Length: 316
Ligand SMILES: NC(=O)c1ccc[n+]([C@@H]2O[C@H](COP(=O)([O-])OP(=O)(O)OC[C@H]3O[C@@H](n4cnc5c(N)ncnc54)[C@H](O)[C@@H]3O)[C@@H](O)[C@H]2O)c1
Image (tube, rainbow, N blue to C red; front, side, top):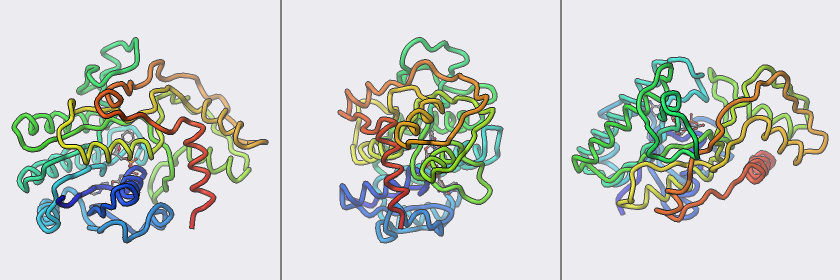
């Protein structure tokens, strides 16, 4: 098999590298802006991947990397996310998620790459225009929406990807995850991550009050389930569909998070104060992944939190 390139070694990317190494003996090339984060050493060995430092916006670097490592398959996780910069319009959404992704796709076509897996988001669905009455399937209307810069930046890239696939550029998949949680680090300049603060306080037995925060009842999914589906798609050639959800198939929010922390940590001192209930009533359907790929998520909230705690306690 030719080489594998992964862009972005963050919350999900680190788990993808780990699974590629442990389950398939594959050592991917990884392109990211920086690799100095000590957090990476708590998840994997530096020898598990070949680091290429730079940006997906750098056309020459991308072209050279594809050629030098004879890249056959790409899993593209690199992005600018609300998790780190907030939800308001941000230039990085369009620079990196739209143009950076387009650059990578055109270079991949040029280099004869066979498979391209693009990370998108459930934020491409047009929930405001179309009422949701059942679990959301991948063919629910998607596209541009008002006040949705992040989702729009991904929707634009999705359209381009489908066009290139129709033109025969490569096999491709679009992965639309729910709200991802798991081992992560907050980098300098990032927004604080509220669920991480809740987890950290519960593990340390410290008091923590989350105040005036929306419930964020969404489809939450553990990072290892997202990584497992991404690896499955990366190593498959043609699949019956292009788009797949990576979700738990359940709606949950900060009240469920708090209840699970109460169950796992007696005397838990994490409190929610004036946090308004609200969010989704229907989750993302995982039927397509089950039918097409025989894939089902393995981590419910209890198991996801337990796995996070295990990681936290055994960090090097
Ligand atoms: N985290 C979530 O809740 C969530 C939800 C839905 C979809 N997604 C999507 O899943 C993917 C992975 O998300 P994550 O949570 O691992 O994000 P992350 O922020 O932890 O990791 C993203 C990585 O991309 C890198 N990156 C950013 N700009 C780059 C550039 N110009 N060139 C090279 N690398 C660059 C960052 O340095 C970072 O390491 C993203 O595409 C994201 O849009 C995430």
